[in-house]
Image (cartoon, rainbow, N blue to C red; front, side, top):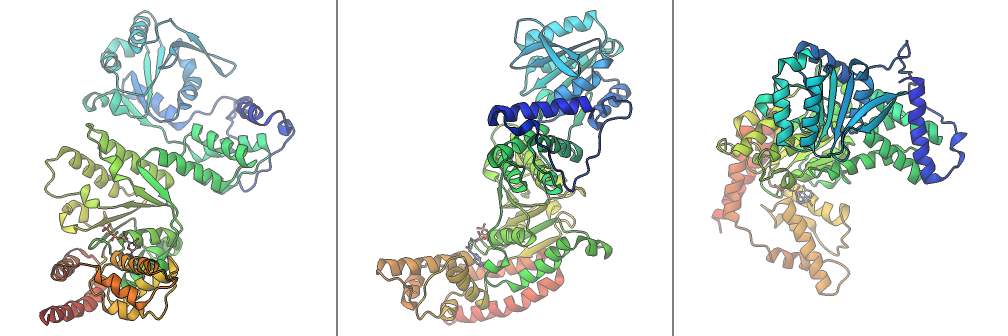
Length: 565
Ligand code: ATP
């Protein structure tokens, strides 16, 4: 960035700060910069260094003989940046913004100056006006910030795109939009130049943070540049200034939290930091060990793993009956890996409007990749990859979005899906490569039940017990799920409260046990079924053998027990 321009950006930041903080020491403060390269991005001859996405547009305009360039971006700062870089190639520039109408644009001393081109504000009128200019003049650039679908714009673009004289006269129409498919249909869009602008590059983030640090006497370190990855230029400036206004300095955690807020606001993902790791999961040692050895260890020692030719795992599918702790495992894994836990908000993804569902899903994937490395948790993943529903347009399209992403080698997000119905998943989903491991999480055995009761009376919450044998309770709860064991503890505690006691007794557990109505025969059948599904889907034989050896003896014991009733 040229020195003059950098000063002006600094000026803008200082002006915003002065508005908030008054005319304090800002002029004299010096920033201290640590652990960050302060590489000057100024080009040798003093000219602006052109960004890749702008170069790409120029090259493609020449090579594809197309007059329409569509930039996919949600950053309003990209349009002015573009105009400042390309204005020398054009005789006149017009810009259309919804709130300003049609503007004639000039660049004066590296600043954009807008002049109202004519009084009407509507896009229809602007398109007519510019069409007239296109006929009369040469080398005209028309830039549009487009937020929503507009039939007139689509028609005008189609007309301009296929008009050879438009290209010959050197005209260019450049659209900035979050969603190109709203502007042009799939059949026409392939005749336009479509370029996706990354939210921000590392250098851009570093640049903005350094400018704000300089103006405010803050420090910038590497973790801040990482924390703002995935944010647009405008978002980075906002979160960094907010951090300064609120806390007097740039702070990695504050930047991260603002970033998560921005992601939450998109409505398609929840972002959390898990509270508990594997310590809050009772039992399931086979599963825990397997995940620790094959996932946690590999991801925590990437260099060692790479030397041994081990690919970092990027997809896990957990299946089993409801309430067996699959979600708990997903959260615990995020904690063990010290990664943010993102939950796909399926309820907000699926929309009744045509094309919206897969767009929402694509947006969620894009956001997750911006936060990556992270865990993306997809509950009831069979909703997206269900067999036999290929005739249902929306599920089919959502399925292909997810499938394509799962197969993408550049994916950085670790996807953790859960399902109660692995047999309902499409074969393409199960195929090796999409999920590294398919892991059954079945009903807890005696040891696991004891530990789950322990976790729910001592780790997750503290329940004062008096003369209670959790071993006895565990014996009486064969075929209970983890969720039911938790509920059992809560009902016992409620019973103690009802009886006005400050501690829970064995009797409270007996009363609680009596309140459960479980269809044992149905449970046993379910256990058989999941054992069968484990044999079919679990793709690690060693794990399966360990699981089967404990489960088979349990199933046999249960059969005998039920027959003796
Ligand atoms: P679903 O298939 O219905 O989504 P799930 O298998 O994901 O169920 P969870 O939501 O993880 O089940 O479990 C519900 C609750 O049960 C957990 O929040 C936890 O409190 C308790 N629970 C289940 N299994 C265990 C366990 N092994 N240790 C401790 N608590 C458990």
